[in-house]
Length: 259
Image (cartoon, rainbow, N blue to C red; front, side, top):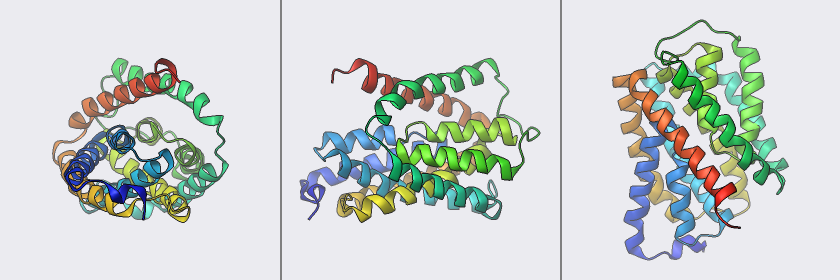
């Protein structure tokens, strides 16, 4: 029986609330893992089991949000097939190729890149509020970012949603609401790919993950509904806030916290 399935019964409402909060935030702006993964680790799960369980519950939320966005017309899943396939390949390759030395290096570099995204959106206040002309065709775009960000998400992960969203805005000309919808489809792909590898290694606490997954689905549906109704002007401040929190957490983990 997995370690986490021996948690005290009173902790399951906490797991549900964590899943709900992470699903809500993730559907709107990405970064739900900032909420869910620390909770799992603080409950005493070993790191690999926490990562696998986090991917398990996050997969439910990202798939639910993707489906809701597709039904509301913010994303056409048929046009995403090349991106889904290439992201799948990249995520599996990243998960298989990751080296222990990669995490510390990426942990120091990623906050700088995320800060660049925040600065770009601050100095370009209209970026992502309205659609613009695409600068890359879908084939080239997905070949670069599907493989590249899929690999990154499989190998490391933090900030992936922010990188996808800004890429869709800048290079595909989408507004932030549609960029968020397309991002969730790609996140769902890399989540499921990573989950398959964690599950094969027995690194998923199923009962705890299912409790969080119920919250994830409900939170993701609510968050996606808010994006559909309120649009890019609602997404922008949430996106900036989550990017800033991701920067702060990575700086704390890699530069501030004693090892």
